[in-house]
Image (cartoon, rainbow, N blue to C red; front, side, top):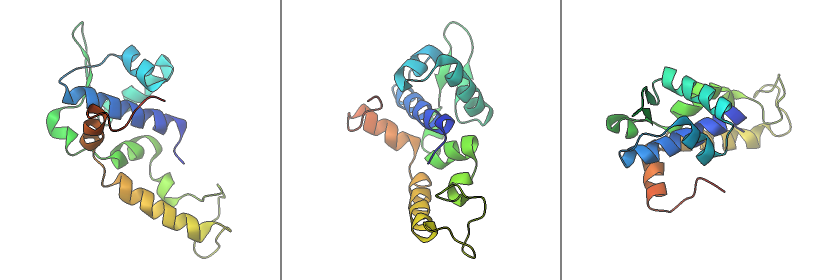
Length: 144
């Protein structure tokens, strides 16, 4: 459902959020390793997330990426998805057809609309901090 860029962006943001709750900045190579993404691709995603003010980049020998405390409570998964993929996930056809809507639906349209609505609800109600806290409590694993 998500583009590969969005998947990596979500993983990176969750990992940075988790490290930020521990008051740690993380470096590009550490993020790339942790989310199993090529460093150059990770750098492009982090550049976009920085531009969109989702993560903060600090330059220098003691630098790295972080998400500030006040933002951790406010950032939603939908913020990351919108920054990388836009709203296509909420409007696109489940079969990838160009012309699919309530007036001329594809065979999966009605079922996919329900799934899309549930996904949107989850993305708009899940904060990065809640997922970071789950990681810190070892309730979920980022790596496979």
